[in-house]
Length: 457
Image (cartoon, rainbow, N blue to C red; front, side, top):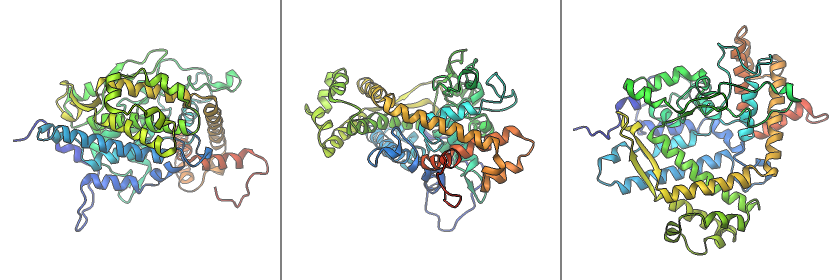
């Protein structure tokens, strides 16, 4: 008898039929994992900023090491749930280990160089149509958002012999779809005027994109959600808060696998970025203590030694031990809850941690955000990166046939007469750059006596 907690078979579908291979031993999700790991976009994460600029040293995280750590934490969350639910039919709905690892490896694959400031720069430039409205033509799917670019890379920009995209399974793509509404649906109703009307300053808060998928991937999302019951599909894409004149809309739902990914991402962000911040002197002992003492005392005393602060601010191995204890405490508190709103169990089940560790996780995330990401030292570098990306984009949009090379130039020339598509091709090219490549590209364009015509970018 089929259990309610048996995933529907359509989640294993691919858009294109894979050619059969002899003596194939891998599962379908093993194949998805391999396709991600062997993709150029995944390798580029080794040279993309996580929080701190990759030129600041060799110790702290890049997008690649962050993605690997998220994968390991997500794996731990699934294993913990399998242990806690042992013998219960809910185990049937949990993602296989290779699936949750795949989703974690791919979740940041669309982020541009220089972190979220690169995202802000490209979002602004993809709205700058040359008039004073700051908006693209009504029939042009504009804007840029890193999560949306991940879906675009996996389904269109990476290539296999069978065609564009990695041809991943439905369930893998659903796990990556963190925000199931399009850019045009989620964008706030009023946008600021282009920055050239305000002395060339592009304010970060003005041009943060909505959390969404890009309109260019609407057909992919339609295919992804097509087998769902109509009521499930309509509810899944609902907003928790509708877009207003001042704020972007926020989606309400995500799949079980995506909730596990989000939780693992939060844990990695809070703990590993904290570790980097302490190691680099951006988070001080008294700042940490003031936050740590706000966490639930019983939870703290149950899961941590009294000297956890001494460990965190001790030698490197002690700091790693303190972070390890934090990660463990968050993982063992994971719980599976049922919304009782959807027919599909993959949509109706959600992973989260208990109240006390959730409050602690939020406090630590807030500390890392305020002391690291919002620090003047980091913001100065991010501001520089944002302006470099805008200047590179301006050069490419002005002289595309001269500056684009290889497949990107070929795609651009094939798109003559379609200005919107050409604009997206340039955006894809810039978004795919690593931080060092973008820096070298910028210097060759704008810094006198830097680089030679014969230097490899």
